Length: 125
Image (cartoon, rainbow, N blue to C red; front, side):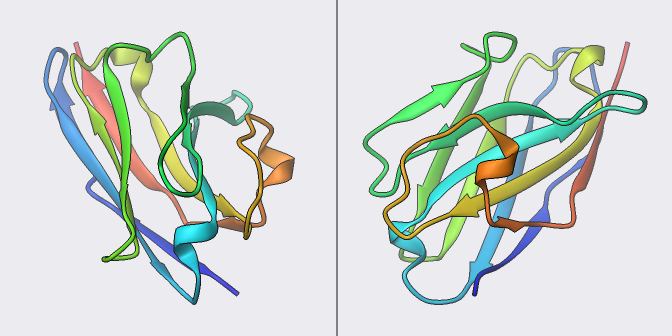
């Protein structure tokens, strides 16, 4: 069993930056694939970024590629999403998710077993 808790959301002006954190509890987190998703009001949850267990492989949605960076510190059982050059369309509730151990990288929300409660990111124009 893994529990995930996000933090770091907030209000930022367009062009600004935020770093989201997701702290995990439970064993063997280093062997879990992890991801970030987001959901804006009235829209479906969408994939943002993911990282394989071990951190060798990452994947990004086209809309955030070059602006967002996913990372993990397995010694701290924590994953991160560095968000730069934020745009108003990035406004959403951001969720971290995990699946494993040993799971392959995936963009499909249904493939992830564990979810955080979400942290709100609001980008003003």
